Image (cartoon, rainbow, N blue to C red):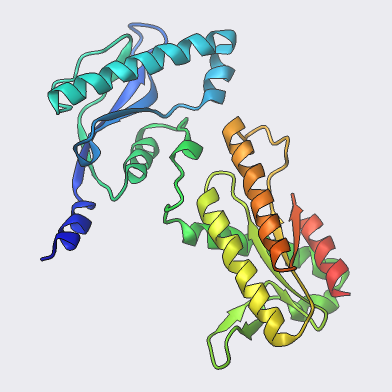
Length: 285
């Protein structure tokens, strides 16, 4: 077996971790998961997972001090684990943070490990922090795209049933190649639908770029000059978004807009299916 193959297989090993809990009222036993201490690839790290907006909502003006306390405690756990090269001995509370039992998870990346921990033990995890560009969540992205496209379709045919035949039509991107389905095709325009998901932004960006390429190729082969990507995006004032999510989403929207402009494709950001339907009708008629 080659050294490369040995390294690849090692990525699927079992790695240890402990959930880290904070007890707001000492002695009550009521705890909130605030972080994870892990030994992925024998590198010991403590990661805060609780979201800033959750702390702000629960503790108001006291939240900044609490964040500092949590970060300080996590840093002590990390230093202690690194010094001992183990998680086993770290079973006692440190500065009010209580370690859970040592668990092991088969993980390819740190993100995989942290996501497993949050899915098992926390509903308040900072999922936008855990999202990485290599996150393998394309099936989920495809599902939300289909749902958005179906909602746009229903809105369109309510007022223009004659456009029904344009939805879900396919075309070749290379002569003799596999048929690729588009969101909408007519003699006037070719459209794709996508969703810029506020959490899975890595997968959203990959999907949007792939659809830009498909639109560009379909336009070249068909000779239809009008082609557009219609993207569902959260509202700028969506209260469920954290500051970091909102900033990254804004940057990603600008990036996709510039990439579409670079190949002379139209790009439309909409916040609901009704707005998406208006764009379809405008371009198709």
